[in-house]
Length: 83
Image (tube, helix red, strand yellow):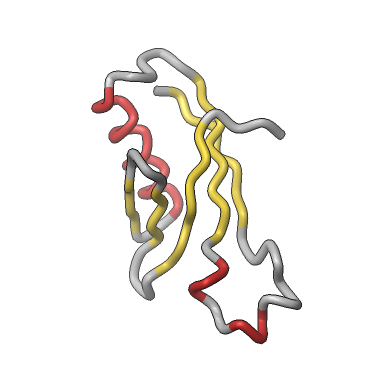
């Protein structure tokens, strides 16, 4: 699946954090994270009226290295948002 925006996703023990070089959003749940993503994309003014596919690849460096061999894709997600 092709994405319009690629981000890295991690969890700090309290909230999910998705970021790339131009945007960072967070939320305690996925619905909150996704809503904050849409709000941030709208505020940027670059994607008005667009339907975007956002890829969130899990930041594997945040889990112990011995788990990497068992979960190389630990948690990746695609999100479709209307801006």
